[in-house]
Length: 80
Image 1 (cartoon, rainbow, N blue to C red):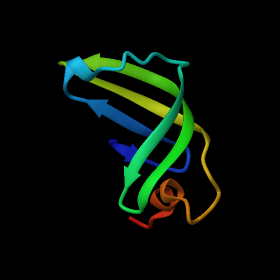
Image 2 (cartoon, one colour):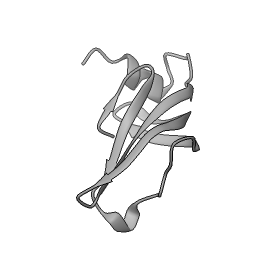
Image 3 (spheres, helix red, strand yellow):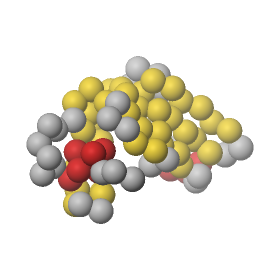
Image 4 (tube, rainbow, N blue to C red):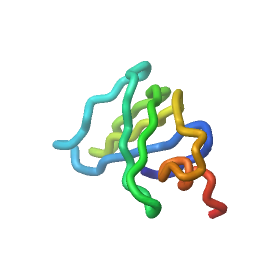
């Protein structure tokens, strides 16, 4: 994960053999290991590109827990 906000996140993979081949409009269920534990959300790919062997994409969140005890919500709400 490159970055994360309340609205979405950016991701990249350096190894082309692990490129998931995502395209704009793909719907995803995402599980993320955070410093607070494992959390999940749902999202939609809003941009995707490949450059110099790196695949990158941006996800707009469509469902994230409002529970402050949820590990992914805690990551989004962290003050850093």
